Image (tube, rainbow, N blue to C red; front, side, top):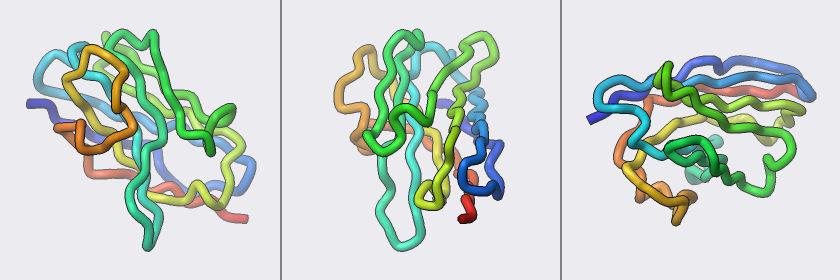
Length: 126
């Protein structure tokens, strides 16, 4: 079992930045590959970014490439999502998720993640 708690969301103007954090407790954090997903009003939840257990591999959805950076600190049991050059279309509830996976396969598939946080709201005004 692992418990996930996101923080760092808020209201920001277009072009601004936010850094989301996801703190994990429970089992050893380093056994989990981590992902960030988001759900905008009236839309399905979508993949944003993923990072491997060690942090050596990452993947992003095309719409955030070059603007968002996922990272992790296994000593602090935390995964981050640095979001720069934010756009109004980035407005959503952002969720972090964990899965016990040794490889970066199907990391965009939310059904492969066993644990989820409660989400944090990100609102980008134009």
